[in-house]
Amino acid sequence: MTATPVPAMVELQGVAKRYGEVNALHRVDLSIAKGEFVTLLGPSGSGKTTLLNLIAGMITPSSGRIVIDGRDATTLPTNRRGLGMVFQNYALMPHMTVFENIAFPLEVRRLSKAEIKRKVGEALELIQLGHVANRKPRELSGGQQQRISLARCIVYNPTLILMDEPLGALDKKLREQMQLEIKRLHAELGITMLYVTHDQDEALTMSDRIVLMNGGRIEQQGAPDTLYFRPETVFSAEFIGSSNLIPGTVEIDADGAYALKTALGRFAAPAPDMALAAGAPAVLLVRPENMALAAAPTAASVAGHIEDSILLGGVVRHFVRCANGSTLVIQELNQPGRSGAHRGDAVRAAWQPQHGRLLPPAPAG
Amino acid sequence: MLLLAPLTAVMLLILIYPLGLTLWTSLYNGRFSFDAYAELASSTLFLRVLRNTFEIAVGGTLVSLLFGYPVALHLAAQPPRKRTAYLIMVMLPFWTSILVKSFALVAVFGNQGLINQFLGFVSGGTVNLPMMFNRVGVILGMINFLLPFMILSILGSLLSLDRRLILAAETMGAGPLRIFWKITLPLSMPGVLAGVLINITLSIGMYITPALLGGRQDMMVANLVDFYTRQTLDWTAASATAMVLLILSGLLVAMLGKVRGAAGLAGAGA
Image (cartoon, rainbow over all chains, first blue to last red; front, side, top):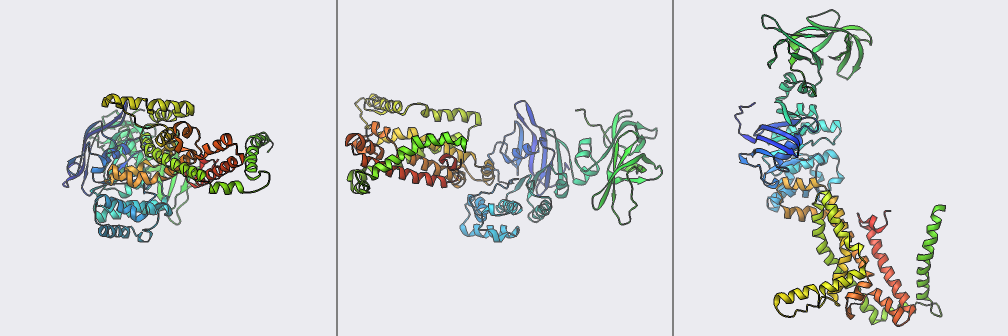
């Protein structure tokens, strides 16, 4: 991800933000390519909103440099950065009609009346809301308001659009619909987008690249697939998708094959991406969908009994209580005529050793 | 209901009874008639004073708005702790008797006052800018009392303005002037309107300030009531004048109740 052939739209070089003694953001280096859709994902307090506000110019960094579109913007005021921003609460002007709201950035740019009329019309067309041009924002639903605020953003072709949890106030169904709409607009217009969310599903659905933040640092970044299948830390594994984590110590055979010795048994595992010495503590990650119920022992399996089985529609989730008291989660596709597993049944949770992944243990605290 | 009884009794005794008595006096002078009102309507003095009252009330309110808005804007931009400290300064005039303040103003704006002496010192001659015992004096004295009401009601509107609207406008490239004219000002209009109505209502009944700081030409309706009561001893005319003033103020307060954001101040929302 470092050697992108496309020139960078945003370049953060050692950017940090301190509030008194509190480090809201440790030194961060981040580059966003032109036309890329990057998501800042993380729990609240992870520094993702601080990062966004730094790029928007609402706060100035304590150290480091911010370059936007090849121009040093570290101390440039917000209104001269040429950005677009979409807010969670829409931030539409309540005293203006939908038309006036979308026309506002064009008036700032001193376009002619005729041109403003044409561009606003086109923007409303793009979000399929041409019929509400003369209404006030409060007369519209939340989803419509957010589409208007999107239109207000794309109407002046900013080089970069920042989105601060734009779908956080919408219900689930509308959110999914809007995710696809934003994705479509990104594909059609090719505008660089930086999207902030704490919702992993949203990040996985929309992004070219996810930047996972934790405690004011970038924990890991990469394509959604990479983050899902190749997490580098326990935090990444737990934040994206659900995971079974089995702690133990690393063992390395004479021929270099890795295994983890745990309270539940010794499990072979692929060689880790990071350095893990023999005898070092480590964690084995197995995604629930890579585990299955088995009757007899396999290459990697753990005995236990079914504590609960829940139906989630397309998938079924089994919770298997192991001998040492820990619980493993198994996720299977739901099919007609699926053999039922019942509470209390003695079963084995089995997986293929190559689906396991060794990770360094989570830092204490 | 029982708990309200003492309060009701007090209100009846000190508010409703005198009010009723005033109304009665304005209508009954040996016999029952509207003569007092008819006389007022044709009295040059009354009409002149009524016009004065409106001119002074509107003028004072406009000056108060002109000075109050920037102060409110500045207060709204302060961090909460600083704002509290500044607000105390805004409220300071309330803790001083209006009589004391009026004399203090004479010391500053009078012929021998600070300003005229300073100007005289600077210019090397004698300066006698007439700022007291005329309309300027009345308005100066009034805004000292009116400003806090104007500032507080505008500040209320400004503080309820969503900060993110300003941020949104900034990201769209708008400069501070455009943001003020297109967003801050229109969205603070309820506060401005409330402040203006409160100020007019308060200043229409002004009595001490025009009496102490105004000239002979600056008599207001309340002073006229005093004139009829104590100088000519025409209590019927005094009562009728008082009733007209009451109705005018009542109308303004009713309008105030209709303005969003001012309901609490007008007592209608309580």
